[in-house]
Length: 490
Image (cartoon, rainbow, N blue to C red):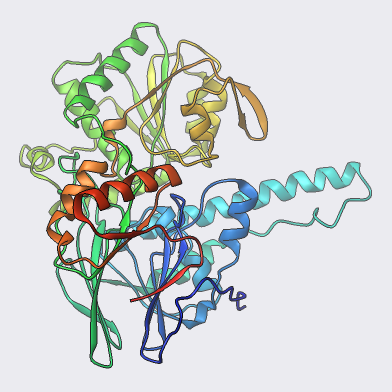
């Protein structure tokens, strides 16, 4: 199967030896990171992520690639989050057979994450098809749109993706094709996350292209701080929080303790949508520390996500990626991700049983933007009770259920039904795994003098516009905000 190629805007001319960059995902939006690099007539992808947003638009973007998948020579993957890696099995399903270069930690995380994403695709399709059959039994004539739903990809496609990963240790220059050398550096976003430097050459002309992936914050729990990139000519830079300043990270434990104790005091339950990679492990570590310090009352905590359980096992296999604070637990022979008040849940029946438990307790469950998974059931059962708290712990993209909850809509749609939101809603901004405006500007300072152009991706329009102005004011660099399908010669 070959997807139709849709051409974006081009610069005036492309000689045979051109080096070209085309933006297909995370272009004027936050999710679906996917950038196509062409060098010496060979095409590569920087990330291959799934788009999240309005359901119909997400379905269209995720199902149809804007290029021929079997023309892609290799993928260079920044990290394992689904909005950066989640379309890899579909790429393979549509004919890609090349290598996927990434860090060892990311390669290990992608195995359970892509399997989980495929499982969700299959289960969602089965659910929708079951509902369609019920409709057919009632209505004899249905329209052409009422046909069986196919998953974007299957567990078989995810399994076929696994052998293509080529783990490369950070700081290791690696030739990935003619005129393309890849090298990665710690991004400080999640376990194994990387920013990368690509050294490109075509007929004697050399260009150095940097890509931040998702850039983290100094001082985040568990993982190491972001590293600087070597000098570059061009930089693809994320801009998720390009218009704001986060609270200091040290304040997050105080706020978390306050929210927990307030909810506990009224006998409520805490429902915490959290990304299975990174955020769940950070929360568990912080709650562990707060209980050790007697700053919160002991209460049951359930991590209700098979993916989070599997991902936590991957974390345990990579202590070389931990920061000094987390290694203190290891030196004291403690598991930073396990303690006696914490229960990890895999089975569906165990998950359902939580609905009948009396509070107070906490449920941490995926997905982080409340778009799929077991968190939907917990929200459905608990957001109508004002004693309870929904704790938002990460960025919520436009049009997601998580954004609607964050904005305190009186009613929110869950499983297609309007549901009254009466629970308290709180947000931990300081725990964001994305650098804020000043952190981004500080990180790029050593690069600024040599940069010819910066491309802003992975941000909404307001954030990107504000961040472009901040870069131009401080560093006097040309900044471009590319749209989907726009191409640029390097």
